[in-house]
Image 1 (cartoon, rainbow, N blue to C red):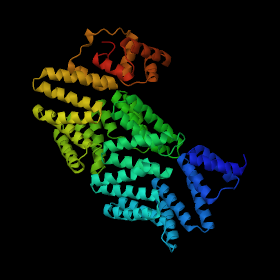
Image 2: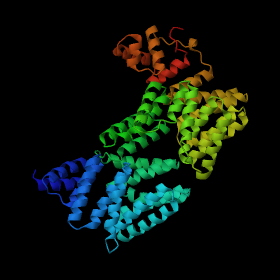
Image 3: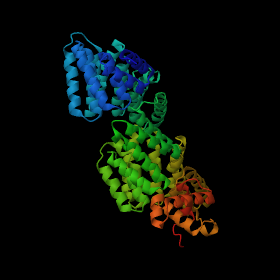
Image 4: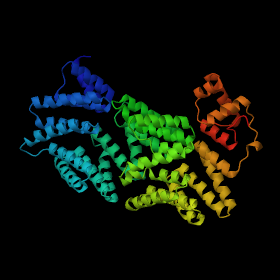
Length: 549
């Protein structure tokens, strides 16, 4: 195929959103020297969308200089703006500032008004948001929206409305802010915007809704982003973040196996990009799922990898230490994490775990103080998620302080909230607390029912440690239930229940990994189980952690 044919093929592939084909064909045409400045822009965007950040920056810089050579200062300024935006996103603040300064200088030379001035207003609004001047950020973004509307630039208008929404949310004007985000999302959902702006607004809107605990919108837009990404199989940009969001939602709704697979897919997708450090969020999500399923060794490894990738490991790591009966380490970890964060919204991600750990070690005053802080944030933002978290915490504290009657009302409220959000794990945890409250008040029949339903939910989820705890509360006795396992299978089961991998078990018992795998398969078949988490629950429930007993 000659260079002109490659160029036409590249342009056509770009229109079809076949980003890899577009990048390959346009790169071939570029080597032949047939690309115009506008074609270099297409090549740069194809590079960005396929995760080639270095190629994106290099090609866009070339497009900038080509526009300057051709006397098109406005188009050169547009390239400089997007260079500055991407460099700022990557943390290269000095280089980002330099390119934004160059874009500003180029536009200041222009006598007539132009749409590029509106984009520079966006950069100014973003700076004011970062600096905490939310009123100024809202006002400047409004000026940018007027420019976008005047020039009919749908990208600029949508970005400006989105920034105005973020500014209002930051002022705790929640409904007004969400309404502006919704308005910006209309253009996204109707496919009116360029692909880079579509992905940018999707991810930013979902991130904002997660930060401000607007759960239903975050879920709605994550589903829309997933559908958009699925239509472009070779899209790398934005798709990794989408998979992390989906994993989080799948976990909340109890689809833990699918959630773990989605988190693993996200890691693979980030590895394909130029920013593998972004995989930290996906690794943390894997750690959470392993911890809940009782695979503590895998959780430990995932949290460690998340930290190495630059992502925090709390509150998951502190809860892992609690599960390992390392209460001092759990308390120290969660306290240290909270001490480093001043932002009330970011602290809400840690406070429920802080309360749980403090109650576990008997520090009820500290738990009560953390609950009050959670309540104060909930009173400001008033979302369903925060209201449910507060009720859950309040009920747990009342129960721990011996007032079962006072605990029942918030616990029922929390259970209803989790049920409404389709969060089966959290709902089952509340049922356990309700059972303890009912038992404390002498209502053993209701307590038994709550425990039975909670245990069934934990077993469906594969929440081995939780199912085992409920079994102990029910007073299960292993000697009454023959298991039919051989002595060696009992040894393997005990090791599985402590979170060891097949390789670790093989080394410990001086047998091959293949033999361990066969034993695990036999255990699953004999006990009617389908996962290591379920086997862990069975071992705890039937007191099989010591095979010599």
